[in-house]
Length: 84
Length: 426
Image (tube, rainbow over all chains, first blue to last red; front, side):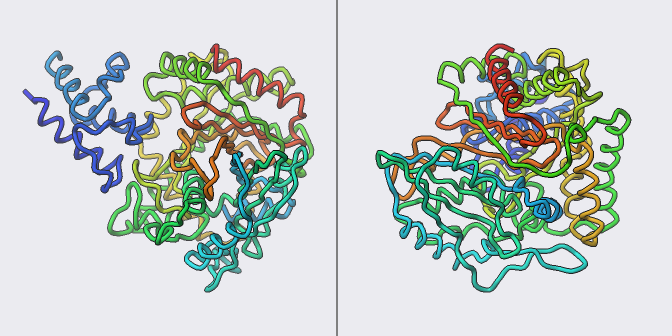
């Protein structure tokens, strides 16, 4: 079973490479929306999750709590993985 | 960008001009602004770049640059539009211009007009924030590599999303670019009908109007955006509502199109970075919607979202960027010919921009508080209509720009009023 910390590490690596500037200093606790995360960033992350873990995060799960930071997003992905 | 500039300047059309208007709660010194701009021009001669090249279009950057012109005017009705419609003398290296409009009661309006080839809207906002910073930063834009206008290609190899240490081989780049052309071919299966054919093709003056939403209205629009498009769905909501309203207008005018193509600008700057300032760090994703999908915003969103996802899955952003880079090497006459062909057809049924939040550093300009902010987007004679959305201090703003030869003022007013209403009650 893939646990949340492992998902968190992969998600963080992805957004640091593909979404945010290297010197933006994004951490697992960084408020994503305040840091500039937008709709295109979200679709990129959703595609990454689909490619890496084989499923598309449903819209019903994409709320402010889940998208607060990488850690909360990873927790959501882990929970949904366990439920599948 | 050079092709657009070439074509538009031939007609004396200022459609490739963008404008930001700052409403200032006080007066500023034109001399102080000129001094500041002189310093900037010394550091960044790209401000004075001009088209060159005989076979291939390219820009020439002078060794020493003249700073952008600063003019002072007394306020009169419609002056901002008049200034927007004054083409910049790009051939002489005029890529930006500052107009101070003195308003009675010791207030000032600053109209900053620039050629889109020099930079995009985020770049322009950052430039303004640095020009107006007091005291000026030690090294104004030292962290921003000056890049050639007319493309983000040169910059993307230094910074920015997707930048890599080496340029892929030409064959690979051609294959990547081909995806965009193939994507375009699909749109031709149901060709959009250009509204430009409704009117003479000669360019005409641009007019614009701005809609300012209150805090309550902004919250209401955002709630609708979240409900229909999900969290962070503002831009998608704005785009789909705009297209629905465009179709409604064109249907009422008896010139509905069998399909509508929307170029969706995608910012390529990594989040958290504004540099490089002097660059167009954006690519365009083309989305096609049909009249049957534009009857309701919900239907439009349902058709819009899968196309965005498909575009990202199939690498169309990178493809579009590669295509733009390769086009720069076409001989100028061919490049201009292709631009003219595009302008006759419907390369986009509507110009759309969504710059999200205005640069938060724009609180003051040369020590004077900034009270209001207006973005005016660049548009071309066809389709002759553009909408740009943005948030200023958390409040939604939108500017509708139209070409007087394609739409009348009454039609543009009708579109704007209906657009506003639909954003609040989709």
